[in-house]
Amino acid sequence: MTDTAAQTDGQHVSQSGYDLTPIRGAERNRLAEKLTPEERHIMLDHGTETPFCGGLLTNKEDGVYTCKLCSLPLFRSVTKFESGTGWPSFYEPFDPEHVREIEDTSHGMRRIETRCARCDSHLGHVFPDGPRPTGLRYCMNSAALEFETE
Image (cartoon, rainbow, N blue to C red; front, side, top):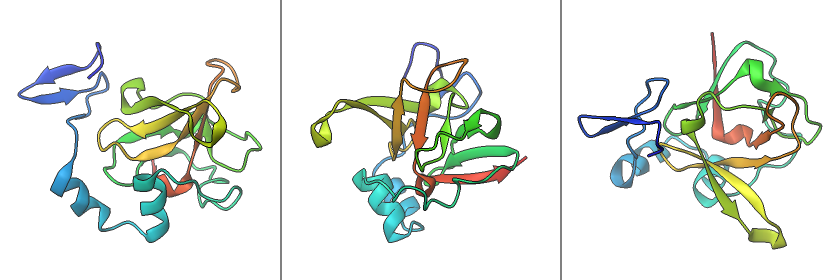
């Protein structure tokens, strides 16, 4: 739980009002049953989809991108931008408390992995080469996201 998250009746609630109580064990396994093998590989085994192949890469609709496993809102469409990397990219999360950042030293490099704060599913990575106003590029796997129109 971050310093800004509230705790109410055993639940961790984000500043934007979403329950961040961790989903683990049997509940996480139950939710994972709906995932395809590729989605499981990406979200649970920390894989990466092939660039320029994700279904949400070219999506231009207004709405919210949520975690495919637990439906926590992760990014707003207004923060999506074309990065040219082959993965959907955003310059800011829906709520900073909804996306966990963890140092990743795999593949001989230092990167910051992003995970869903509620279910701990792998989403992608964040890099310091994005546009203003944040200068960040949240490079996400389409397979880890669900899109909900506004």
